[in-house]
Image (cartoon, rainbow, N blue to C red; front, side, top):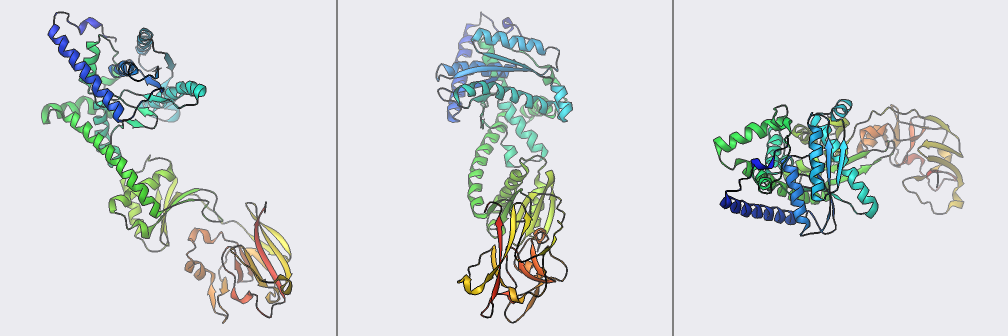
Length: 499
């Protein structure tokens, strides 16, 4: 329904008109000051405003046009017909007519929200939001292709919306980030009207004799947010304290400023304790993982420890969906465990505690690969992923000074009695760790070197029976070291395909 203008205007009440005019000017000034405080717009910007036809979005459009007189920028309106309500077509027609009268470019999108919701298993609210913002960005892309400059999206959330969102998150069990409610600026999205309440918005439209449409679904209790808006906030205003809604919205604004500060402090904490990893060790497929150095992480205040964990979960999981307080608490417990421990997390993630590192990573099923290949000397053998093991015989006297590194080793060829094998670890494997012939099991060596348990079955070994000549990428057995009696050496080198 579109309200007719004469319902709001009484030509005989001149004193009220003057009072309303003063209120209108005060309200506009408040919005402009808020926009400037939040650095929402600058000269030359391109703004797409979402205009549903309701009082909030119509008011937004008018305020942006007023601000355009002060700061020149380009403005267009986007209306999305969700095709849910019978009167949706009338709303679209009204917004188009309004935009034409105001000289604002108008873009109409008609999308079957219910069909998308069913197809992608989303709520109508989620599907509607996805379609709306898709339309906003699509409209901006036309401008951006012409200028190369990113545009912005203006939406009509107001004070009650912020209070309602904060309470909605609070009731569901949020932390400080959810208590921040709706932020004035988030990326390319701006919300100029967060300082206005519904009464101010409608009063402004009445003063300007501008009508608006009413969405009948806003009067239903189907959605939780509607229940908060229609019952909880009015009850708080009438039965608890006048101004409760504004107080809640202001608290949300303060919490938003607090989270900005926390984000800065968290960045400093991450510099001390975070390890961002991708393909973090040989034998693992490329993946995303974040490790936290526990010694440094434990120095942080308890609150900041939790914030770092939450950040890591968000980064690896690409969002906070299904992540809650219980999962952060689970990671806190995991960090206190001894030895190598794991814990499942939502979204296909897992937490792993190992040797002073707490790692949050994508959980993948890893089957031990088969590797059992006899080695001929000289020879070249594939390790997979473009890596090769190259074995070369060399006369020690012609080598000169032997230089070894992590992936190049030299052994005494004369001490090798049996054919060598390239394989993964087996029960009974061992190394000689010193010149006195002291033996250590391969398992003991890997524990001592703090090689993560999931990696141990994926490290290539060069073996003579159960005697390990080289744990590839790590040490060789002392028994095979080149000494003064060595005449022929075996150079063992790992090289990349393009090396």
